[in-house]
Each structure stands twice: as C-alpha cells, then as structure tokens.
Length: 297
Length: 335
Image (cartoon, rainbow over all chains, first blue to last red; front, side, top):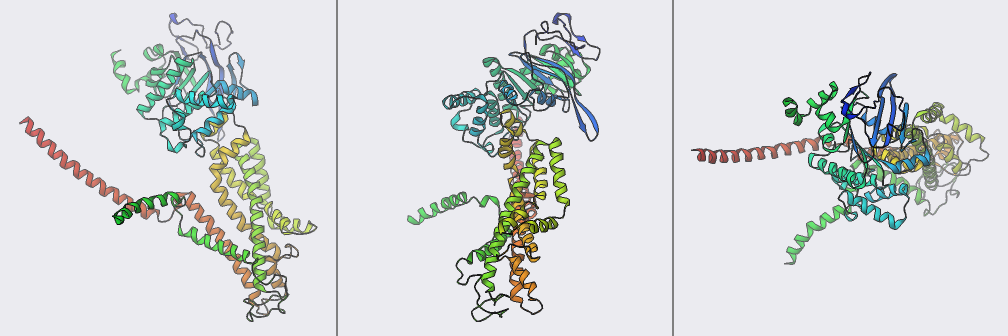
C-alpha cells in the first residue's frame, strides 16, 4: 500500500522520511523508515487473542506491516513472539481477531471458498518442519500435482511447470517425483516444499522458519534459493526467523517482534547496525558471531 | 565350481526373499499369529457348512440324542445335527459381526473425523450427540428396535447393532483426528486448494487408519456378542440359525437341566473363541502400530546398549593407541 495514496488512521505509523532518522511513537514502536515501493501485501492493526484455559493470550498485538513488491521482509523475534501466528493469519489459515489484511489493495481479511483459493494462487508458504509438512503416504509427484489443481493448467503444461519449479530449487523430475518423503533428506524435502509453493506462480512467498530445522550447509542452500527466486521471479518474500544472522543475509527490510508487538522496523542496515529498541539490542547481543562487531561500537 | 556359485547366490536370494516379504518389517509377534489362527479356525468352521453333508434344517434324530452313531455332537431339541447347526450359526454370527462392524466403523469414523478435524461448535454438537448415545444403554435400544421391526432378518439385526455401537469408535477417532489436524501437512493441503472432504480422506484418514482397523476388529467382536445376547433373549433373526439362537433353544428346552451339554457347550466355546481371538488380534495389532508396547523390547534394548558400549570401548582403545602414537611422533619432532 502506498503511504501517500492511502491515508492511514493508525497513530503509530509514521510518514517519516528515512533521512530524518528513527522515530519513536507513543507506544514505543521504533520506525526507521517506511517502504517507498508499492506494497503487495499489508496488514493493519492486526490482533489475535487466544483463549487458553480461560486466560486471554494476546499473541499478535496491533501489528501493521507492509510487504514491498520484489523485496524480502524479515520478521525477527524469539519463540512465542507471535511471528508464526502473524504468518498464519496472513495466509488466511487462521482468522484474525481484529484488523485488516490487504492484498493488492483488496481486503482479503474475510474472503472464503473460491476467492480464498484464488488468493492462495498468489500467496504461498513454506513451513518450518520439512518432515511434518509432507503427507507421508503420498509421493512428491502426487503432492505437486495436487497443488496444480489450484494453478488450473492442462496436462502438457503441468509437466512443464513441474519441471520448471523443481528446476528453480535444483531438482529434476526424474529423481524427485516418484520418491516418498522418507526417501529424501531434510534439505531436499524443504526444496520440494519451495517448489510446491512456486507451482502457482505466487506473488508472495511466506517462509515461516523455513530453514530452522536444517543444518548449516543446507540452510545456506535454501536461503540462496529464496534469494535467487526474489531476483529472478520478482517474488516478494516474508522471511520469518529467530536468527538475526539469516535475516541480515537475506532481507531488505527487518521488523522485530516482541510479545506480539512490532518494536522496531526499517531497512536491514538501520535495524541491525543502529538498533534503537531495547529488545532489538538484546537480540543482537545474543548473536554470537555479531558480538565482536557490537563491542567495537 | 557350481558349489561356489551356489554359496555366492544363497545370501543374495535370502536378501531378496526378506525384501519381498512385506510382513517382515512389521515385526509381528507370536500373539498375532495365535490370534490369526483362532480367527481362521472359526471362519473355517463357518465355511465348512457349505461342504458338510447334513443341512442345518435336516431332521436326523430325536430330542437331544447323545453324541455317537455318526453324529459327532448329537442332536439338538429339534433333532437337527448340532455340528451342522453350529456351522450355520457360526457363519451367521460372523456375517452379522462383519456387517455391524462395518456400519459402526463407518458411522463412528465419519462423525469422529469431522468432529476432530473441524473443531469448534461442530465438534461440540457431534460429541454432545455421541455422548448422549453413549449414555443410553445400548441393549435397551437394541431390544426396542428389534421388537418394533416387523421382521427380524440377519441384515436388519446387523444394522441395528451397528447403529447402536458406533460412539466408542467416534470418540477414539475424534481424539486422533484432532491431533492430526494440527500437523503442518494439513496447512500445506489447504494451501494447495484441497477441500474439506479431500483433506479428511487423503490427509487425516491415512494417519488414523491403524486405530480405525483396531476399532473395527473390536466392533466385530462386540457385535457378535451383542447378537448372541439378543438372540438368547429370543430377539434374534427369525428362521435362521445363529450361535445366539442355538443357546436360546438350548435354554428353552432345558438342555442344562437334562445334561445335554452338546447342545449348549459348542456354541459357547465358539463364541468364547471368536471374542478372544478378535481381542487378541486387536492387542497384537496395537503392538504392531505402537512400537512402544512391543514385548521383549526392553531385552532387545539392553542387548543393543551392551553392543554399543562394547563398540565405543573398542573405538576409544583404538583412539587412545593412535593418540599415543601421534604424541610420540610429535615429541620426537620437537626434540
């Protein structure tokens, strides 16, 4: 959403120019800068309250974010900070308690049925667990073909599309399609999941902790795949992680979440190298390989 | 030369055989095989009625003729051959058990799947209904329905038993389905555009199929006993022999008082074997699907731990000797 085009009633969203330095709103949100490109997906004042054994848990508290087209936005925060809940709401897998989600200027907060399936051809996701994401009773081929129904393409085009999408993640149909999930490694599975998400030729890809269960070498592999997709297909990526290192490696912009609230946001350079919020500093101090550089400061 | 070839070929063949035998990987216990043999014997008994020379309705003697004279188990109160009646009765009971088991499992799985997966008020509603059905004593419902039916056939009886015994299956399936519903592959299926029925059948049902099979086995054995109970009360299928009606006539014609054990003991033994066999089958299937229940597991684990410890010791010794060697060379270098 273009900040100038649409007036924003939210009190804490600033029309700050990046040159004027970070600004802190009344409720403590540090905003370094706002995206100048047009946002594909955005959420405004999104809340999620869970009822857990009679207690109300505010998992996502008044979050407003914009996802600029063709950019990578990383949402960083510790476990339980509401990142995944936010992602599931953006994917419309979970209803919002209040707030609106807008996709290309259209309100998608309460769409259903065919409209929702059309939304899912544009917004896709890769999840955390490459083991639980698979239905272990079906081959990779049937998983991909199933997703193709949503893409609505004919048979010949379907095979070409499968080959193309597997190609993006460095796999060939010959060595993937007939395999069952348990016959592949964790990295391969996660790449198959990325390929599946790409079948619909989406505009937005949500990667919810997509690399956290992979070991270091495979992690870089998947991160590079995501980066190439952004560069080659102009994909907008929402990268959710608890690892600031990965966020820095991949993302253009970073939003930091604590206890369901966004506490700081801006470009990667602004947030990582001149953090303002107390929580961001604490997160950065906990990163072992950045500690040296922070001490020099 | 040929001997050598054979020796080389043998292990290959063995590995091929083990690969071709899908049951090997399932680690079936001896319990399973005993249960299977019992169930198979009862089924054979039922099927043997087709080749047995005497029909179950044929009069071959008078009231309670004792075993002998070519009649292995004598005659019942109508003068029918007890063996022939037993075979026909076993067949009827198994048929009723199977049909009732299928009906109960279908209803239970459908309600449990939808309640467990969809959740919310749908779950409250369906489970509330299930609990109400569960609270009503099913034998009373069975009796009322059986009386109100104009004519009792084995099919109507099977269906009546089926629609009174599904609640336990529904509850078990609901618990399993609601745990599968939180798995990520369900989200992936939804994002792939799958609709609710497709998700239930393709993404939830396969994960709970083992429980469903076990519940089905229990339902079959429960339905056979329910049929026997109803038939003993005289509410059984009219004009058909079943294990229950056999007991009913034995009671009505004073078989116990007159000491005609051959009239009531054989159906009792077959009923006991059937329910014991199915229960044992269910328990052993539980072991197959749930490895933690496997017997002898502790012993195996102890053995494996001992083997690992021995391997680690050997490795440590090898490493120690290697370190000794390398430190010596290094010492030599520095000197």
